[in-house]
Image: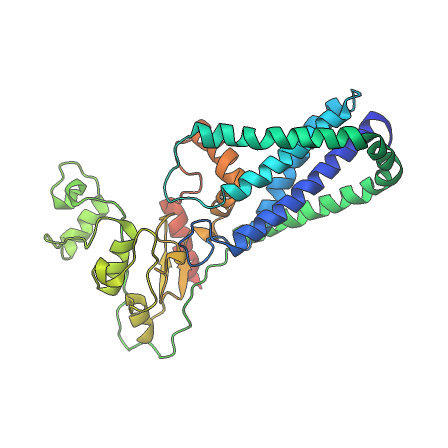
Length: 359
């Protein structure tokens, strides 16, 4: 394959290969280190090994196509090669620098979001330009004689890797790995023991629930429960935020006793409600929509045989990647909804419940 088309195809395949290698490195980081520093374990599943290489390979393949086409029509090919090299250096540097995130939305910061990438890209571009200007004649000869015969097998290989990645994502979506840290119950369940359903609505105030006198019918299903069951009129939360409140509900301890805090997971010492139930022969399962402080890495999953948090969603694993947390998230909140694109809704939670129940 010669001429302009051959040059562009070589640029395209080499760029895709570079993106694949960067994606494998990113998947390794996500698999081995939590993005939120206090987490006890990373909040991703095996699908990240398919997602990160696939999305990075696609990004750099498109960048290679966009730069390879004008490069094939000018003598200054080293200029476009330097641009792509600087883009790769900036991408990897920002991927590592922005790897750790804080809970909650991050406001736009001009220095961090604009000046920092520019400061990384500029020297990387200048150094790359000097290198490519010196060695480009040799690279052109190498490309024609040595690399050109390798493009066809490289293309087939990248195509096969893409197919495997898509198949892996498809398998994950059909059979998400729902698991938990606890061992199976070692004792049989007691005869006649009741089923227990524990439902929490995070960040909901009593004075906005119609069951507690709010004039608008905001919670008709809870109102029906209240009419047929017991409504506690003097129920007070142990604290005002998610992790510490749930830790108190699950352990019966006050926040200063169980120790779970803004940057401190729940310790393994306190015995949780789920652990007590499992010791009595119960099968325990939790299904979580909270994308912050109820992930299993915060220690809140103790005692649950099944703990279905956001790590079992393709969207959440995509959101942990560099491109997912920047380009995809920005496009989603600009074009669709000002929200996190990996946020779960009731349908997603119920699907997990029904999938577990059918087993």
